[in-house]
Length: 339
Image (tube, rainbow, N blue to C red; front, side):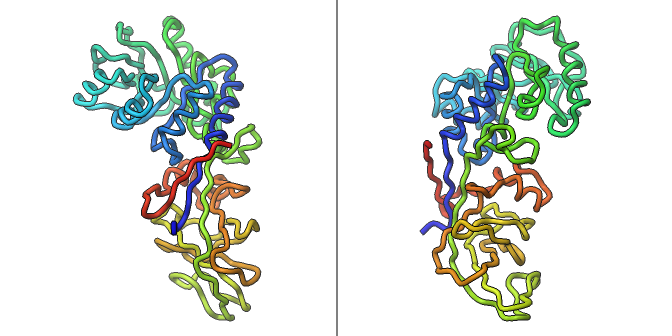
């Protein structure tokens, strides 16, 4: 019996893709499926996005891109991270497109030149004269989720630097940019987190018409009653003040249910319940209002349990939580639905 199960709704990914295309108002949607599709499965998520109208897939590494090429055939794939000499050769052979942020532009491979307009990470300070290999110009937002003024400043820097080369494909917007900044549309937008129905703003995704695609389920493996003064978990962080029923869920931080999630809410038998005590490597405790049978369903994500809410408790971002969920078959069973 699986300790937990991940279910990815490919229909939700397609609906999110269409929502983003509507926001982009004619610009292309390039689906970002790096980190195994943000924990949703890169091949399946990528195929769903393409089926809904996305025109390219974006990843961080050449090995990620090669996996997509083998699975999905002649789709447009952009590698956004740096590549070694050997990987450049592999990219050339596999007809991948590469992002160049410093150094020489390689021959025989389609290239997107990246400008640093304020992210302070990858990117050139000035745009070189594009060679025949250059098919796109790009940049990346630093704070589109929280700083409108600086985001618009980046848009203008990018526009000023690239207007004389507007015949090339220009792209700067991420999910937050696509949803909030019409000025950032240009020719395409590289959207990741919103594609999976998770808000780039850390708010309820429904506010932007997004639908979470990932559900994570488990069950109660043990139910016991603590008497006053008894505790559960390492460090005795939860000590019962009255007779208290608790359930033990066979999921822990090795599965991606982070140690910092103590105090968050999950659902047990469809009802919200608080996670208590220290989260262990392979288990955690949840406070119950009554005795429940072993095997009672537990929802860790989905059906009203939002990654954004978990992230606020753990003082992180939802991106980190979903990409950290283990998809190893010995820990988690994975399933696909198409609702």
